[in-house]
View (cartoon, each protein chain N blue to C red):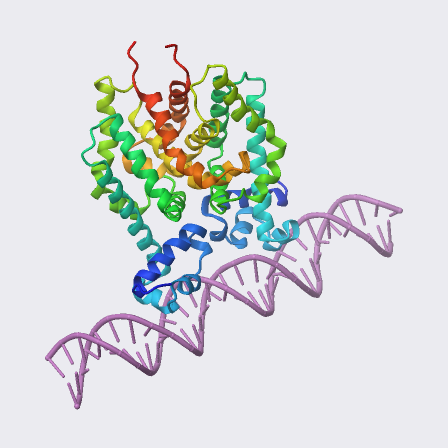
Length: 204
Length: 204
DNA sequence: TATATTACCAACCAACCGGTCGGTTAAACC
DNA sequence: GGTTTAACCGACCGGTTGGTTGGTAATATA
């Protein structure tokens, strides 16, 4: 791989492979091979495969949330906040598509409760949640945004940001010859276009 | 389980478990137990675990597409078509949340090409693809819909329909006390609300 | 220089995996 | 009544899995 420390090489390889193939489709031998480390080092540094998996999730979920927080800091609430969030969120995921898959896979494993690793980390980023949902509510109250449900709208936004990384094959089904990387890059403008036109209150 | 035939019981148990936990996290022993069948029956009827998995995907993807086709048949193109599609799609997924997960998991396994089982089936439902994308293009041309990219818009629609079944835990993170089943049921109206307001062309 | 400590590894193990096999049962067919 | 056939099953097999062990080499500490 490269000259990073063994622990880091293992964590990187794990995040990559877990994201690409899923926790149960990847063996500790696979991870050791990609990390160019001895298999025993996984248990030396992380204790168990499950703990390594949790460590990978914690690392990248924290990294993503931190990135978004920095990007939306200081942006005024309401529609500008939504635009900044979408741009930061999609930009982050485009740069690390395996991380998008890793997070989606972890979400899939839980139905009625948040994944433990994520609910541990979330309180540290409470600001983002409040900024998105609450600033949407405030924008509705002051008449800038139509009378929409802030939580449903937030889920709409996150859906459109994240889903392409799952749905690339669908796009290929609908339009086989497409340049998928370019399509994914262009998405952000179309998401913002739909949101701005669908949310902004018109002068009547 | 019940008094259905062994082959059907195996296929149902497989679809349920594969969707809930993922292909590699489910053993043939697990499937046999849930289907109340002997493990050897899986190989007797389906040949291999992989073939059973493919059979489950084919069955439910065909079922879903058939359901949607019936629901949008005869609906006029443009915005009414979009509304009918969203209603049929979300209604189907709400009734079978494990199928939503199964399909998402299969999509996750492929990056730049459609899953074979799906691209085999898709030609039979070419009408839906054309109706959604092409009728959107037509609606743009006749000025009913704003000048949006039909494919990007289609992906936006599918994103919002499907993602809740992945993102339920996110909703629980944002608002822990929520009644998630009700939230999911109510989503369809908010999706349609955003789409209608975001797509319809205003008289200027 | 003696002694911990840290990083590392080849070889190993019990449990479980997907898959097979030889044989049984019971209804269908002649 | 005898035979074919489809449905079924307990017991088994080679290979792989997550995880362990006993030990080595190098560096830091005293």
